[in-house]
Each structure stands twice: as C-alpha cells, then as structure tokens.
Length: 115
Image (cartoon, rainbow, N blue to C red; front, side, top):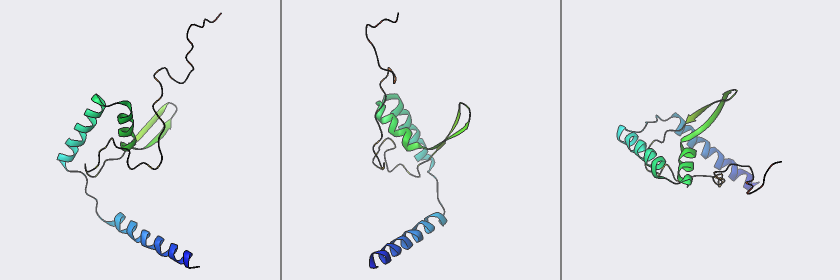
C-alpha cells in the first residue's frame, strides 16, 4: 500500500509542476536567437550529412496533419532558446531508423533483363 501512496504523491507533485508550467507566461525566443536558429538551420541543410538533417527536421516538426488527399500540413515547434543543438537527437525517447538508400525501397537488380 505504501508503494501506491508514494506513486500518488509523485503524480500529484508532477501535476502541480505541470499546472504551474502551463499557467506561467511563456516568452518566445529573442530576435538574436531567431537569427541564430535560422543560421544553424541553413548551415545544417547546406553542409550537414543526412543524419543531421533528419534530426533537425525531427526536432523542429511537432506534428504532421493530413488535411486531404495528397495534402499534409506540418506543425512546427519553435525552441524557446538556443541552449540545445537543434540537430541533436539527445532528447529522443527511442532511436529512429536510418536514412533510406538513395535507390529507394525496391531491391536493386544488376544485369537482369525483363523479357
């Protein structure tokens, strides 16, 4: 029974933390931070490897909404500060799969002819 009481106490404490966070005013990034984010994003896409680009997109896109046939609408997350590297995957819960081979998903066949 004490384990259950401890769990309830932890959950109530976490609830109060989240309520306080939700009700406190949130300030967006400063103009300097926005400029730094833009620079980091541009550099990552101009010079980064595929894994860096993938991590960047995963960190900036909060949700992808399907709005119709062949139509999607990305919802972006704007970081509140530049303390963390946008292309870092340190905050991920699970490891994401690798980048697909440039040839696509089909099996490449060399030297075979279709008759």
